[in-house]
Image (tube, rainbow, N blue to C red; front, side, top):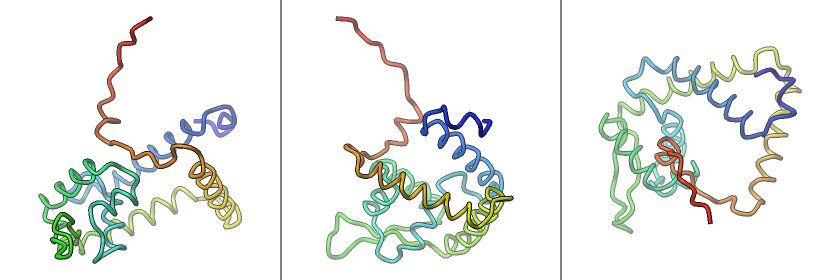
Length: 168
């Protein structure tokens, strides 16, 4: 996408386009790991340990509980994460990185730092600071908008099918 076109496009299109580019570069660099997705969630879990639950992860990532459950199952399958029962609320489970998980999170963090450096190549510190300040304002504006607390269902997004519309 040509930067001159950004002014005439919906913000959603621009952010989606840039996000896909960013995720694509990061995924290629992270492909040497045995896992194929959800890299960023591991960094959140690492930062929030030992007291992060699946519900807290869903809230932080603004995604539905079912998507988080699938994500956690995926990490448990690869022995990167384990669930620990909360003795105060047996319905709640804490998420903890395994030894394997603790070994790969520094690599994930390093690669995201490299991708950030690539993304900000040729951009001054002042421009970068302005960019984050503007993103913060946009986020605050949208957070204050009605329905801002809607959770995203990742499965539904991935399998969106056209719906038949009945005329009245």
